[in-house]
Image 1 (spheres, one colour):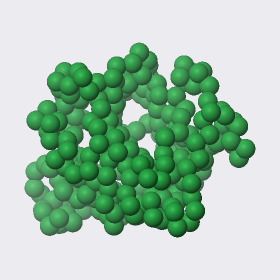
Image 2 (image 1 turned 60 degrees about the horizontal axis):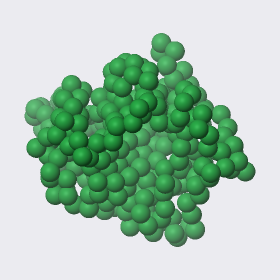
Image 3 (image 1 turned 180 degrees about the vertical axis):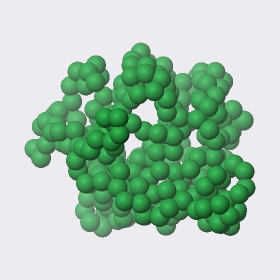
Length: 279
């Protein structure tokens, strides 16, 4: 197994069609290839070691990119478990933590992990979903030059016809300055899409990015992106399991304050109930 991740940066603001008619935006140049067999991971372990493959993914976006990119930054990482394992763990979470689960008709099931300042904060989940927790630990350690806290974490379980309509995340400088979405399993057909917010903040423009997330696809968007783009996700058939982390760090907060960037939530002007019904 390759032990490092392949970095894929966000493309320019346009829709692009991939093979078989699928959109493949969020695709850009490869900044660095995955290690070949026998090379060392950034933590010094060998690529020939069995899973888990690495404790650290190299090349994730910088503090500056997270804070100021006007688009989500896309990264493809090598996960330490199969899609089937993550699906089994999601099933176990739904079964073992019904009090933490939010089931909503037409929307993905949401298992609420709560906040995480240190790894031990999620210890109660590790017995049931060790691979999901491992992915969360690895991801947060790989965001370099900042100390990341998770204000709130969820595991989202999308099934046929589930939809989260167009929305902005509720970001602010002190509590939530960027969001990380890691797809753990993806079977069937669905979309993760980004759409521009009009300059007057009264309406929405065109869909700029539309893609079918795959196992190991990671999307990170910060407050600057959240101010100008709205996003949605839906699944038409099959299943998608995603880890969603609403994050903050003093480092990102300091950069945003230094440049005078504020959170601008404009949903009250353009949101429609139809967004929760129409794909």
